[in-house]
Image (tube, rainbow, N blue to C red; front, side, top):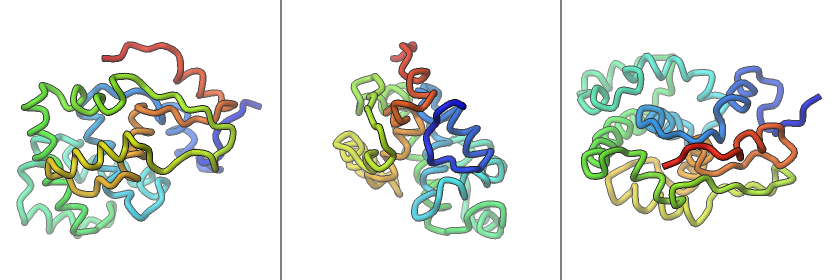
Length: 193
């Protein structure tokens, strides 16, 4: 039986996410924004809860289209707060709209959000060496710096812990356990900018 990280538990969707997405370097702006939205809503909740509502979030937030979300008005926000398929938290819904505006400002300045965000890890994945799940940190100097920089640019729900979870999801850090079958797969050299 292949060795794997323990955090997916017995949940099939969590295993699929772990096996196919978690820790894989993201260089697509739409995917970056998707993870920002999902991590915003994860604040104070479990990733399992968010992952099981991911497709509902995709429908509610226009396929994670940053331009469309940036134009959501108060009427649209109130509609979203009636949507039982997502987390109905007014602060998080409003933060997603303002984060879309801040995200587009970075795209305008840097060409892509990708070019901006990868600078926090000098353009390449940081591969950690963890033998046990309890050794994996919740923050890092890089997530601290990212949190401060994004906050200054008007992003909400971007504390260091949320930024670190985002870095894990977007493959900016590889926190698969060293004996997990995905550790070496993610560590293989890949094209990175």
